[in-house]
Image 1 (tube, rainbow, N blue to C red):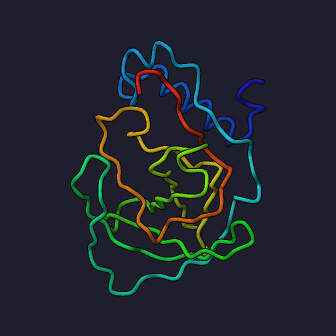
Image 2: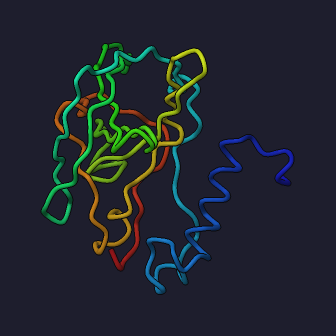
Length: 178
């Protein structure tokens, strides 16, 4: 399939594989890049592409989120969204480092530690012109610490941990070096 015929998701995944396998700035070590055959993904799951109405957090204060290497990082709760997963409504928190930073949803679901990275995964959240948010879990990705322990990754907070599995996005990365 040539790039013109690829879906946006397929093109995104292809470009990410090229970055991971070929770019010295990728989170992979030189040895991992030499062995790299592509990331593993769940099949596209349209039910996990969601247009949601945010409930903005008023008077947000800076909070600290633990990092995978110890220590903490600072961020702000920006909004909450209600998502239906596995027949149950879940409230998730969307974060933003500052007013110019992208919206960020760190989460841990029922696939963590088995089908996906044990710490959890991340999702970039996109604001829409009508004030709603676009969350597409098909773009959920592993934190860089899933590939290389030299990276410090924010651990999804308890408020963003869900028991139900979200079988969309990136799967665990298996490599003998990690």
